[in-house]
Image 1 (cartoon, rainbow, N blue to C red):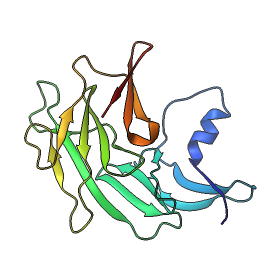
Image 2: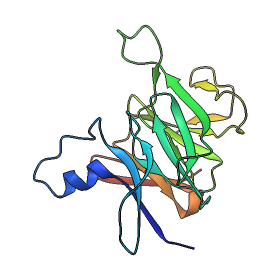
Image 3: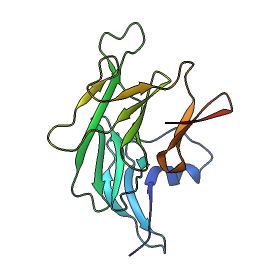
Image 4: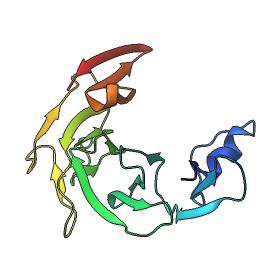
Length: 175
């Protein structure tokens, strides 16, 4: 099996320049063989965030303006998983979408940051239209895991734990 490395093409440009203005709107999601070669298009980004990976070796997860999707490395078999929304600042009348959705390595859970607070949400089964989960009235198991917010976060120990940080401090905890 060919080894693959995945990245946003624009990220490579930013890493090789002296300026980082964030993800560009024209960044495409590509994979490049670990042995080198030309980039292979997975998905025109069109607002999609960075890639996330689970134990499924043939799929890549991407957070888009429409929610969390997954697809194969050739861009086929696109699956819509879920959208998570919560209350924004006082002047937002409508709920706002999460800043990102990060699936656990086993694909059973998702970390959803909304307004610097983190929620762990059960990943619903795929089929039909992807559900929109409201953190105030969830239709799937959900737990708020912060009370003072988090600046960075991620999964640890194969998804059994999650790490989050605030102001250069790390707070590991079991799920």
